[in-house]
Length: 266
Image (cartoon, rainbow, N blue to C red):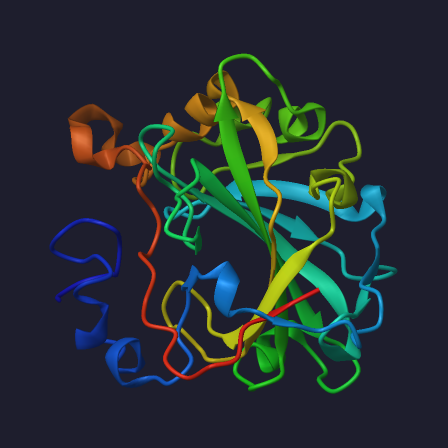
C-alpha cells in the first residue's frame, strides 16, 4: 500500500497491514462480530454512568475518512461498567455504508446496521492528554451505537449534525455548532451493552480501547444518512475532477476474529 490509508481496494482494510503490521499481528483488534450467546453475564459491573456538557460540543470537521465532532473534555465523565478509572469525552464520529444494509463496523450475531457512531473517551485519571492515552492498553473507552435506517424516523439530535454536513462537504472543512448538541441524546434508550478489549478501528489501530457497544440501535432516517453519503474524501481544490470513488461511503472496517477474548454483557 503506497500513500495514505483509506477504504478503497488499493488502500483499504485488506491492505492496512502493509503500513500497520498490527492489523494482522495484533491480538486485540476491532471490530468483531458480537455473538450474543457467547457473552458472559457481568451482573457484578457497577452501573455505567456518563455526564456531558452540551455547550462543550464545539465544532465538526471533515477528516477525509468521516465527519468528526471535537469536544472540550472539561466536565464530561464516563465511568462504571468495565471501567476502573474515570474517562472524559474526546471526540465522536461515525462509519456508514452506501445503503442501509451495511455500514456498521461491529455486527450483532452477523447482522450489519446502516451506520455506527463512536463516542471516544480517554482515561483522564491515568494520562495527561488524550493523545498519550490513545497509545496505552487502558487509555481509551469507546461507546459504540448502532444506527438503524428507517424511511422517515428523523433523530432530532442527529439533525444538529446533519444540518452542518453540507458546510463540510470537502476534506478539511470545519463548521461550528449554532446550538448545543448533547451526546447523551445519541445513546439508545436501553443501556444493555457488550464489552470487550479491542483497538481503534482505523490506523494506527492501537490496541488501547475498552469497547462498550450498546445492543439496541437508535433509529435514524434515510435522509439523515444520505447527508453523510454526500460527503467527499477529497479537498475542495480537487472539486473540478471529482470521481465516483471520492464519495465518503463504506468507510468501515469489517469484523476481525475475536479469538479467545472475553465478551461480557451487562
